[in-house]
Image (cartoon, rainbow, N blue to C red; front, side, top):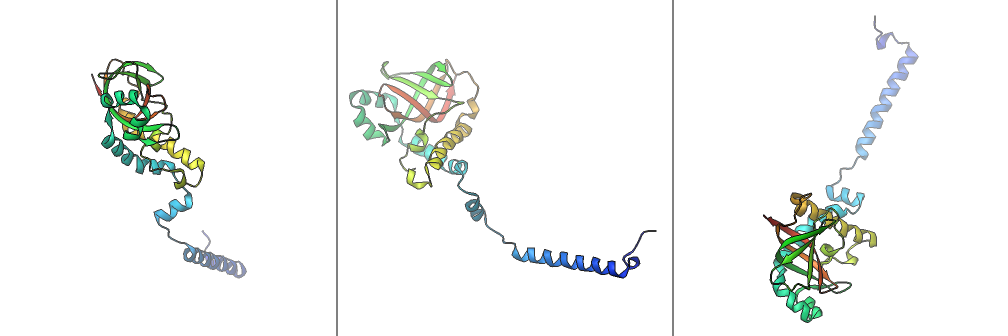
Length: 214
């Protein structure tokens, strides 16, 4: 027959009551001490998230580049004539040179490590135009292209660097996912993106939009 509390000797029964009462008091104290915090407070407690920043900010960068992109056929002759003046006219100052938003349509003629060289009509042949398609996206062009994201906006250099990498990853997720792993050589690509104009005859574009045309 199973034992009941009444069958337990008195001294032991008292200990059971005391333990139960103590547990109830402890639970009540824990409940009173529990604080419900908002999502914003939680994020503040956890710390800065480059990934969340990139997710929220990339659409703004994408819109800026698309709205301000100059066609490559217009930009190219001005760059060859005076790269500094062209950069000042169409782009924003970077650490070295200018970052310029550009749009173009070109045929992918060569690929090296996910970077395609494009043959673009009405652009002089002495200008080499390439576009990054991943998996590796190098540089901080996306972070710096609007001129609005500054080092002083962040706690330290690490956060600033992490934002650049997170924006590249977010662009890959939103823009390059559909063409990831595809062989693009021979296809026409309609590209909108930005490049840092260090060498006016060598444009390495980080895209915010790519459309493939067979």
